[in-house]
Amino acid sequence: MERLTLTGPHVRLEPLTRAHIEALAEASAAPDPMADPAIYSWTVVPQGIAEMTQYVETALAWQDAGTAVPFVVVRLSDNAVIGSTRYFNIERWLWPAGHPRHGSPYPDVCEIGWTWYSRPAIRSGANPEGKFLMLQHAFEQWKVLRVCLHTDSRNTRSQAAMERLGFQREGVIRAHKIAVDGVPRDSFRYSMTAAEWPEVKQRLMERVADNGARVGASIP
Image (tube, rainbow, N blue to C red; front, side):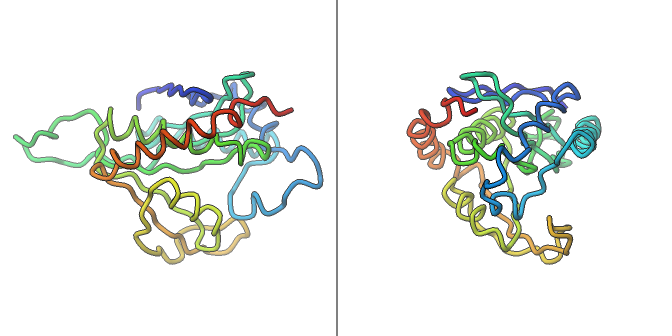
């Protein structure tokens, strides 16, 4: 897959490499013992160098297989690494000869996921800006037909965030994957189609502008 760098007014999504392991491990660590324990309740966030190394190696293996494009998220104000995200489950359909999409080098559909942010960055507005950059590239450069997201059925915070971003809930995938607490989780599936993107784009642009001051703030 192509190596992408997506840059917004306050964050940059740059290609994930092994050189980011230490910075990502620092970003995922809780800054103090009184931090909100609910923040990572439903999200698998690697802790320490060993877990982060495995996380990065898996992401790079998927990239080499052509099914993922992983990023680190960098705050522009101080070049701090504040999280990670990726395109994955990238599909290219076998369009018949003569179809306008036949032979296209770009994906037809994809998912966005494996997204986490450092605790101080979680409510900073970095996530909406990062999602905007990824959706804009997927719909306007790749010309994908659909982008999907999934979340634990118990994760009401994530569900609300996806709905604020403009994603539509499609249904429940039962026993979809291992949850962070080690049980088979049911996942809520959300999607956005190319036809829905123009309206969502305008709302997201306004939201990114409103969140700008918080995203750009340097948080120790």
